[in-house]
Structures are given as C-alpha cells and as structure tokens.
Image 1 (cartoon, protein in one colour):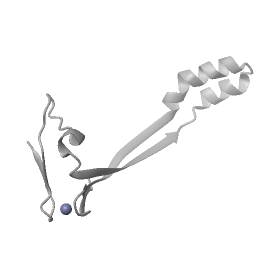
Image 2: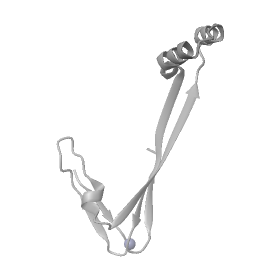
Image 3: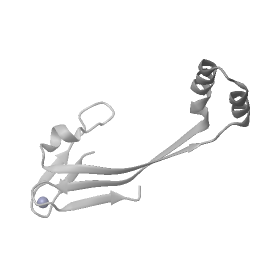
Image 4: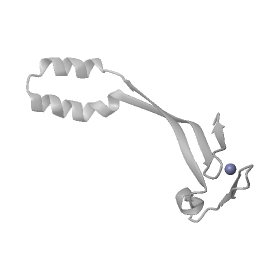
Length: 102
Ligand SMILES: [Zn+2]
C-alpha cells in the first residue's frame, strides 16, 4: 500500500512503506513538501481505592506513603487517548486537508 497526497497547486507526495510492518517515515520522505499536525486527546481519570485511602490515612511515615503510592497509583489512574484529527498542510500554497472521525 502507498499513500498519495496531492495538492490542488500540484505539490505531490507519495509515501511508501520502507520497513517490515509497513512503516512509512513521513519526515524522511516528505522533504518538507507537506507538514503534518495532529490533535490528540488524552483523558486521565483517577479512581481512588478506599482500601488504599484508608491505608494512607493510617500511615504517618512519608517513605511508607511513597511506597504505597508507587505501588498503587498506576492501578488508580485510567488513561484514554484518541486521535481526533490528522492534518496535512501544503508547504507550497498553505492548503490543507483534515482527516477526522477515525
Ligand atoms: Zn499546495
């Protein structure tokens, strides 16, 4: 598979995969013909576990509190991320296309 980006002004870029796994390295192949911008949304939610909160409340030693947090904090944080928009902008004339609704 290959990806062609063709601007109305005639600027053109063909992206070809170059590695196992079909990775096409944009910066190596674009030679500045187009610019890429992304809109990535990251939502983090913290779910406090009652048992951990109780244990922390009963602990006065800072190093013990740090140990508890280091062990448990990852399990209490949920991270969701999504790519909302991928924009190709022509370096020649400034026209652009937004890819969205993935
Ligand atoms: Zn253009």
